[in-house]
Amino acid sequence: MGTDGTMKHLQDILERAARTRLVIFDVDGVLTDGSLFLGDDGQEYKAFNSRDGHGIAMLRRTPVQIAIITGRRSRVVEHRMADLGVQHVYQGRRDKLPAFREVLETLGVGSEQTAYVGDDVVDLPVMVRVGLAVAVQDAHPLVKRHAHWITASPGGRGAAREVCELLMEGHGVLEETLAEYTR
Image 1 (tube, rainbow, N blue to C red):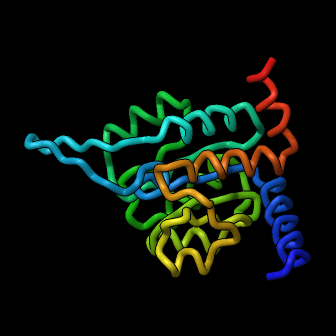
Image 2: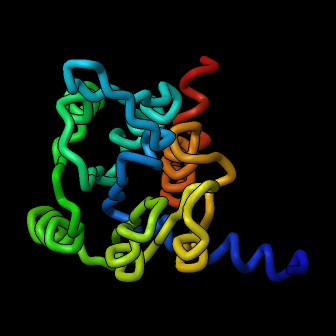
């Protein structure tokens, strides 16, 4: 794609980001690298990226609401989202579409005002319905094909931070937000 096409694509993505009032993240493969660590006692462990977490914390200071929809159920996710102040957490939702509809209704947000970040085919039923569909860099090829934007970073390794900064840029607050750290 030439420079002109790249600029038009970037402008389209920023316009979609500016319309976004809700971002929904998948967990495994998006907020984590998809690895599942299981102890002998059956306890599940996940590794979350601290920069992704700080991106979510910064995004919480904007009008964009944040939700999680994940097919697995884990107390680790519950604890991490509580730590980040994410209130809309839908776990154990292998079929993500009903949870998607529920969060839209609860928050009074339209699908065209929603961004969704996914990595695998189970995310597609939601991704094809939102105004900004994002795939992480290491997403399944079919997911990438249906995404409006693909992060440069893989899941669990900075992808969520990129999405948060994209949304802040779309809302015109990224530069101001980052400047707070150099004062």
